[in-house]
Image (cartoon, rainbow, N blue to C red; front, side, top):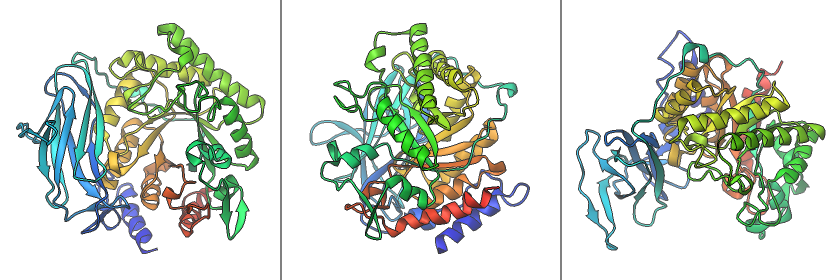
Length: 486
């Protein structure tokens, strides 16, 4: 494909150590990520740090654009944008000038801006009270862009790791072309939101097992999330328990039977855990301090030993899901850096209690947000959190441009001496792989696409038939997985 060769040529030149431009200077991905005109569908809001100190002066850059149905920015757009702030903070120009605030028709205040050549760049400045501040960018009937910015105490002690804490990973970590298909049992059982689906998958008119189909098209790893008690009334799967231990054990057997790698994603909650919600499981609701750490440590070890007993241990684990604002709130919220670090390390110790050789990933949702990625990794590593690999989410609607992703990953590898996996993504499938595998010294360890089995991924239609787009993964496997096998 023409676009593939362009991308690879650009990346090859930049990945060459000692020749060409500096690695942090990203190639131009405009040919695939931007169009001159088109039908806008959504507002793209990138907040380059969603953790700030509540000192009245800490700030972060905001970048606003509008995108079409393929997540491409429309460079000719001149849309009027209304920016709403709920919480202690203000919108300013990049040089700190306060901008006008107007009331909308409902009397709610907003800051107006207008795209110029498709982009508006502003700043958010923190107030003086620790808060969870919602920033939302709206334009007419387009899907709004939003972020939740967590402001932490102004006197929070910020640390940076010593050279001795930035040691290289020695555990073997394979290259991954992964897929998170945690929804598969619900799809097959036509449960809940999947009740109108066909519950089956087809290729060339023949019914096929979803896991075998993915394997046949180049995928070599499956990622699964696990909740503590999802069957609870307020859990992910009330009364049923999808993505609980029993369900995950069943899926693990299928993954291992297919001869694929297995990444286990501990959410440490009964429900979804992400930067906007990281709630304790009901069983741990009254626990704090050492009791909470003990439960976290014991639960992690128990799950892994149970999987080992049935012959399906994970090949890698995540301690939490998108934990850049912490997990197990309030104890492990980002506002308590010491508390968060202690809980993360308890999870690491839980893994070591089952298998000290199992690689441990720390997963933050900061694909193109280098400022915040450095803040989080600096403060966690300096506080003794051990990790073998950095996990990143990349959704351009929230996490910036492909150029941002490229620059961030190259900087993190150089700064922390750890391999990286883009463990969640959906858009720009080819380019995400090209970027990850362009990292020097084989530090790009792969990807995991988020829920590819739905029609929105483009790999399947609404009737469960595989589309020609899946063949891109045959090509990617040949270039980046098979070509590197011994």
